[in-house]
Image 1 (cartoon, rainbow, N blue to C red):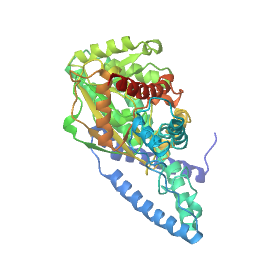
Image 2 (image 1 turned 180 degrees about the vertical axis):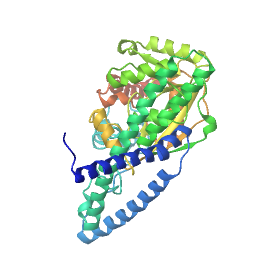
Image 3 (image 1 turned 30 degrees about the vertical axis):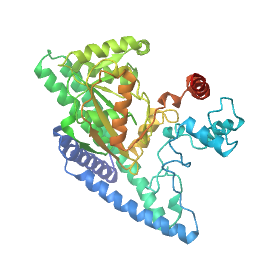
Length: 455
């Protein structure tokens, strides 16, 4: 029989003790507090420490840039072109006055009108307000992450050492810790919901299902070192309603579900995600659709209507944008969830990008790569605002109601309110958008001509 040498035996013992201590710390300081929904304040101390380090690094970068005459990068937060909120008619009037001296009373086409459309086209190419919503939000200062725009760690030796130390901490300590927590949370979710699913329907099953979901989501939140501030909790969604929120990342679900109990809506998946979905639906009435059913808008609306009409069922969690936006704006809400006549509970989510970028650019990164980037960030810091419930007014259609809810979310979260469809992330601009501008111009000329003819 092979006998371990004394040195090998010592290494094995030390490794065993280290693993035991690690799991004990995980259990005492993370998992147990997550189960009971309490916090020791360790994450907030960690965040304050990071902020001080970032401030020192920023000052050192500015001083080093001045010494070496390097220009500091400053992103254009509000765009590179100053745009005045004027209408097509007003701008055409101004062009005609400054050029030919004619006004819109002249019904004929003026060659100078072309300059308006040329300028708008060039502005759109140079400062596209849609495309830039699908790339990571740019920072003015360095957050010690290797994926920052500029290689600031070459400015001084101390910054280089600090950056290297940060890499070791994030990849050698935080990453294994977070993977262990994520595995624990997902395993407990699958196991707990499966066991609860065998219980008969009633208050006991509902109580256990709620707390199993909350416990597991809170563990997953800690797997991301997420520091979340919830505002106006008295407005949290209630049974029989629909919770709608702006969408930045797949973890939006975890962020909201760690503070409330929701019925999820989504497409049925295979693999690990499919296992989780099948386990969850046994304990809670989630609404899962087959791939073919998702395309049937009427079938989806019918299923959602049946759910919200039962006031004993959980509020449905929906992200009406249909795709992830980089948390600088809110784009067009799909009208489907606003047609069914339920009370809507708006929620605004705003992430702080200086600790880690939560945005998922699905056209650039796969899910595994995205999760690796998330788990090697410093932390995920965000604020969540629960807005007062809203209902559709008698003189509103579904689109107007959706826009009103979207504007409220954008205003509360400090986000830009855009009318563009998030589907432009993967599709070309529809011809209807082009035709709309043509119709406006034609109506402007023909309308003025008709008005003058009547007079």
